[in-house]
Amino acid sequence: MVRELPKAETHVWRFPLTSQGINDLNHLTPEEVAFSAKFAFPHLQEFWILGRQSVRRILSLYLDCRPEEIIFLSGPQGKPYLKDFPNLHFNFSNSGEWGVIALTRDREIGVDIEKVDSNLDIDEVSQVSLTETERRHLSIVPPSEKSSWFFKYWTVKEAVLKALGTGLSLEPTRLCLSLEKSKPEMLWIEGQENVTTAWDLKPLSLPEGYFGFVAIEQKALHVKEFEWPFAV
Image (cartoon, rainbow, N blue to C red; front, side):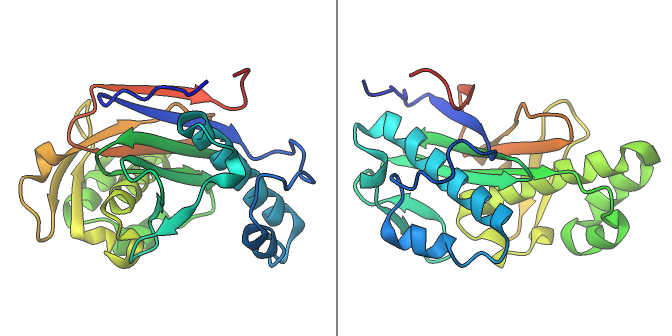
């Protein structure tokens, strides 16, 4: 049974990167199996395999095909898309022990999650990733909340950059956000017009210690979140 994805909806799936049958490589292509063998540390290899398995299995719910039949291609900056299903747009991300994949139709989408790193030097990293406006806001939040606010900024920026298809080839300081209101707002992207209404930015429901956002081109009327695996 094919899972429906109405045009007005965006679906976001959360999946754990913990052992669910690491030796089951049936859903991966020979190229993916060979790539996974290059990881120097077993836990990184396991995370990668489980992430790719989950992405393939979730996509297959919508495509009426077996997970291993899905063919991924990459855009000029590495953004993945589907060879045989160009209208289904998706993006995925992983950090720590969790991964997410976001799907929508006929519009660009990007997603990012990050596990909070308590050892990160927020002030130093902010200098190369946040605009002056964003740093000014970060400077007035309570010290105990500084890390949380930084990761909110970072995950929104990363989600937008992934939706644009540029990744970090476009410097994060070339887009500016406002997170001070109840709803995140894009203020500007260098070289682009009307960005305030062009992007819908939604926070994700994630375990404690994680932050994540999905960036959707134009307004998403409904964002539905699911957790994998579940009984299909």
